[in-house]
Amino acid sequence: MAPQHRIALVTGAGTGIGQAVATALVEGSWTVVLAGRRPAPLVDLARALQGRGPAALAVPADVCDPQSVERLFARIRSEFGRLDLLFNNAGITTRPTPIDELAIDAWRSVIDTNLTGVFLCTRAAFALMKSQQPRGGRIINNGSISAYVPRPHSAAYTASKHAVLGLTRATALEGRTHDIACGQIDIGNAATALGAGLFSSALQADGRTAAEPTVDVAHVARAVVGMAALPLDANVLTMTVMATKMPFVGRG
Image (tube, rainbow, N blue to C red; front, side, top):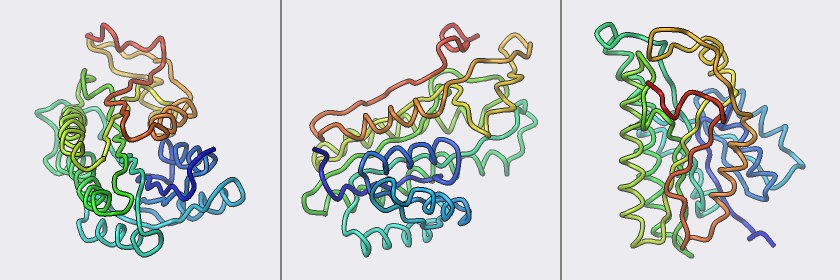
């Protein structure tokens, strides 16, 4: 029987992977806090999930803003008193751009969201998890296969995801003392609205463009739920979920 009163936070929960994971967690008997910049998709999702499992609470938040993250975690403390799972999912990318043409503001926007946002939420979750009773919890970061191999013209996104991998490993190391497990799911070509245009005509390393296979986002959601279900003395440090026939192995 699943443990009761398990509390999860999903960032970027309004659409795509975040929405799929939040839905799967609720259906797996988790109470889920839905965080994201835009209130409307969060509220719509919370309503859609009513009756499908425990509660889903919509809390608009900007992971790039330290004060917004503080308010988010203060709400979690006041509503639930603890956090058992953080899924750091919020992320953005830019259109493919040669590195010498990449605007500084675009670089900063990607790094602020994909890296600093993960750090701010991890920092707050770590502090809560190490002090709550019973102590401990799990943090799962949404990495990318770009944490290992880049696409052409994706310097900001690639750098951010390489850095997230380092942050995942550092958090996993520091978490040992406090019963906090940290892992990363690296996703290749999930079929979401964000990736629809990219995968239908993806720039290849040799300069060609080609359509690439995609994987149903439901498979990603099931993988995250599986990672989350492990006891805290077991951890999936990294997991890759990808379309079987996509050009990743041997890319370039």
